Image 1 (tube, rainbow over the protein chains, first blue to last red):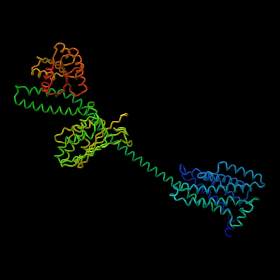
Image 2: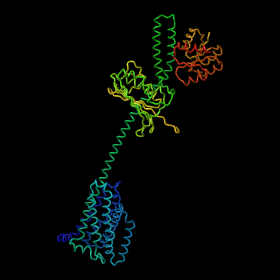
Image 3: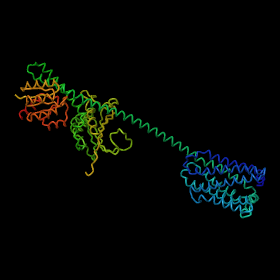
Image 4: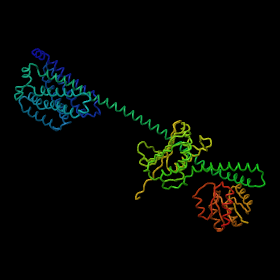
Length: 513
Length: 121
């Protein structure tokens, strides 16, 4: 103890230097932290502590100088700097405490400052009185508020701060602030009044055997270490934020990619439906033009056939011509059916019944091919508006294809259900609007399936994989569903069967019904 | 002998129908436009008119109205290349007896339409 005492007294300048340097380190450490945009409210008060540190450091260096070359000017400058710095520390402590407990109002500091100034001026020794009173009423409460405020702040934010493992730094900094406030705020110059007349730097030194300055410096060193530790929260926060930003950006990128893929898909669909629509329009025009000459051909041939003066061969040929003309007529009328827009009757119908009737039309064929027809009907399907005959044709077309593709028998599943279009992931080009109700009919076969190339062409006119097909069945079906305001889609993989999905809009119920 | 007027802007169709009708023992005249059809109705007063709907200039429907103004008795059958129920209904309202879609069998025309209609008239 004696040694420390001896050394301390002999090296007070070193202690002042260390003390001052500790402040510089604290100030710089806080300044370099990424506190900007921090969610921690602590960050908003830290500039006050920086001001405290940067004002206090030169005061300590002045104290140090004062030891070697005593000067009244150094002393006064040092005191003024110190007192100003205490003001910032007080405000720091007050606001810090205010984060959790609003006890002291903003005018308390000016009030104390003015009171202390008046009291000091009235006293015989201004500087000594000021030194003591400022210690008691500003430095001491400042340290207490800072220490308690930090602990309370930690408690209030424990949930967020605990994972950052900064608890011990908060406790150390708080402990150092509290004890520091004692060594700095209570142990002051010797005054004429209580308690400074018996507890002061000189009496402390003789009582403990170590000057208070050494304890102050010790507190400052611990505080410096702990502050650097506490400041980790800002680094962690920024790291978290960066991580989050990267994740968000990644997600945005993925969403963008998904949107792009969807757009590509939509475009392909759009091209397909546009193509089919234009083919339909073209077919209608062509059909009209073909019918007139076709009529002449069939009429003239009929006349030839009826002419008794002709020989058998001519009649034979005429018959063949008539048959072929009849074929052309059928193809043309099928083509026309695709573009026949106005001509379907909208009547309320139960889609299950429509399908049921279509099934009964091919049940014999299915039986012969050893195909099991499975019906998974939802019986709460709302009524639709549409043309029964046309819709039946659609289902018959799809099911006939299915039956024909199942050469080795198997299961043909027909499923119906209703669905509400969700708002998520809608496109402007989508047929159905969000919130709209639709009826879905799924027809799934266990047939040969199709490769991607075939699949992309199934709805095109004159596309067929059958030996005797014309290739208009699905083309017409597409047109019918389109006219009903619905969608028809196909999905298939070679060897895995095909699924056709028909989606039809459910008419909105009128009020009062 | 019953007189039938065939109206179609296509010569080949008129010729073919005329040939057929004559063979079946009718008197057949032809008109290649709506305007000509009205003139022929005024002059010749046919018992029956086979009238094409889609023609350049005065179309079949217009001609139908005009013919009905001149002759309330004549049987008129509309001929069309495209099935269109709405237009068909309109023709019936305007006084046509029926409509028939090209290409049709001449047998059908004779047995189903002409015989019945001429009986009725």
